[in-house]
Amino acid sequence: MRIISGIQPTGEPHLGNYLGAIKRWTELQHEQECLIFLADLHAITVYNEPGALARTIREAAATLIACGIDPNKTVLFDQARVPAHAEMAWLLNCTARIGWLNRMTQFKEKSGKNRENASVGLYSYPVLQAADILLYQATHVPVGEDQKQHLELTRDIATKFNTDFGVEVFTVPEPLIGKAGARIMSLRDGTAKMSKSDPSDMSRINLTDDSDTIAQKVKKAKTDPEPLPDTMDGLKGRPEAANLVTIFAVLANRTPDEVLGEFAGQGFGAFKPRLADLVVETLRPIRARFETLRAGPAEIDRILMDGAVKARALSAPTLAAAYKAVGLPR
Ligand code: AQP
Image (cartoon, rainbow, N blue to C red; front, top):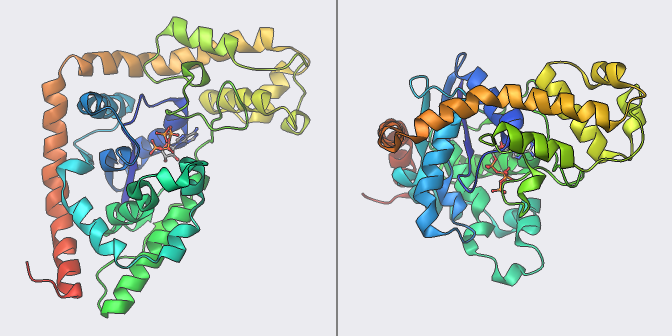
């Protein structure tokens, strides 16, 4: 099995990224061949302050390492240092169909009402994602609910390319089914996912927040005045409450119903301090490692450059095969 996944270095990784993706990557690297990349080419599909990108790329890398990604086990790199991603994306842009991209719901969500003004890059974002995956002959991609449609598109592009040119250049990747990562919602709105790009910092817990900030954010998290029921069924129509119980359960390695068994009949005044303690304890070692790593930016750059060297070598044969298949001399 070869597994690939990525994260956009667009802001500070948060508890949703950790519980939904990063934690799983740290486990997978002990069992399978893993590549994890910082999707900096994806990051510029919307305007990102150029002066800040180099820093956010380093900080995202430091956060991943602090969470347990081991650069000796995982090939950790950023896309921009591996030009094959942009090259392959162009080849695949010529295979992907406009009708396929028109169906991508994430573009509709991210482009909002002002679609005519969205960048072409945002529109063809899933084609770059296909390039990220297919370049490495990845066999499996861990996908959350929000990314299922993009992986389907990757499979369609790979199959059409192989068929059009009559040569099996690409492995058609499978979704990695397994223990599903939790979907963590905003602390301000239980119907929106916790997100780096939410303008309110109070909506998320950043992996590098200090203990006081975490306690403050949990305390201020939106809830309701009702007491907690004894099962998750009783939380229907209370998305904020359900989200906090889910976070508690994942962090405590318990089922949500087990957590509710303990807190049934109590209000959030009792629940929130316990939840804050759990989050603080989980993130304390991550933050400590992050602070140490942040003090050595040259070491982070070295790790990313080493990763890029490995990624270039791994991707080169597939890129060459794709150029050859379409008939372009190099
Ligand atoms: N709230 C979440 N709950 C569970 N998983 C999440 N992921 C993101 N948010 C949650 C997962 O984290 C991985 C990396 O995500 P990403 O940074 O590439 O992009 P995203 O999904 O668009 O995350 P954000 O935080 O919402 O970023 P912005 O605001 O920059 O768009 C993915 O596996 C994702 O599923």
